[in-house]
Length: 631
Image (cartoon, rainbow, N blue to C red):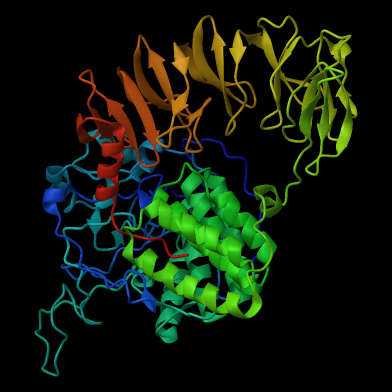
């Protein structure tokens, strides 16, 4: 089992002479975010039988004989810029590599976006003949003849790129380009051998069987799965970048888990999370955590598995991925006899897909039958837990008001007073800390959950913002000159801002000289304070006061809105009356009031012809390729 290692600080780098740059795009989209080519280029997928509940998974292959798309957040083969293979990682004596994360690459939201969108039809046709673009290419993606996920080189096919125009028929093993199997006749002298099957694509093509009693996957051919695992190991030996190692390690963990090698699975899965977190990419980290959670579940470490499933699931993920996470969290609850809680997860999974995912429906049907059988024998088990219980974080004391004294105090989850009513004002606890003000004081003090003061009122803070990411914005005059302090009252960001919002995902929106921008936890200005507004409406109706987990924020300039990323790069120029961030795209309103969408590169995806954004969201969902990551 590989011991997890601490990744280096995530710092953008422009060159790293010690690690060859991958010759693929700097970020790969997640499978749920892959969008198929335009509908007129697609043929409908084959009908699936909802009653076929014993087998599931992506078993289709392409018409041209290529292996089916891999379904995780994966890209295949990594080579150096000159086309040569990278140096293999050091082995740990077990035949598996034991690497150290390379310097984390900055999140390239433009490339990550295609987690988003397909190229227009003519671009996809041109891109089909291209080789995988280099990192330099991705910086000019708008000028490309197609987006990265439509690259179809023989040794690399993005697993997120789902080409619905292909005929999903599985060729016989050992054939090439869908041709019939070779006969005993002597092959032609100029016949080319079939290309090797990529192990990631082969893993995606396995027709998993779901055990109706344990709700665990089974491989129909364990020997084939061992070959796939060996292939993943071979790819790991020539792969050095954090993104690819996170992907390959977590997929190898899946193979080892289903083969019953749980120690190997757990070691790989923990390393995969380390690499994924080093990339700073939200969806990649969510998938790695979910695969680790499954390895823990199979080992019986349910508490940690429950926590990881809960941490991985977020409203900012695509609904397809969220549904899958709820389904697997439900299976984990089933293992523990928490059948009511399991049913809630299964119900949420179905709701997120609106009953339109036949494979998910079939798996949930199997799961509910297992629940019914077990409940008849043992009952439904304990009541569902609160999120705080699942995450293992104690519920903080809640502010309560005494009307007679007209003072605030704090009570625990059972309603018992833990901090007496003695404050004229009291903020909710955040990160175990709360700002309070006594009646006789005009300035705020900071307390912990026991009521002990960490920062006294005599420090002079007339205005305060709750803690987030370990820092709090405070103002001495209550009107401006905001600065950021930590819990020990050490100033981390000097005063100078007219307004400041809480930190979110390591960034905070600030206003200076009348303009809005953003700073990081060190106080460095990452988005210039030139915008008239910075706040991010989401497709689910919420609005975040800053950046999304993917590092995107909506900005406004002269009444027009656009999008910037965490580095300050303009992804969508401020040119639209309204912009809403969708998990895989940007919803935009035109002057006419009609709605359309842009992909995550800011390129047109859906023309603004829809009367409302709900119709655009439905159209995006139809364009999404029908893929599920292997968990």
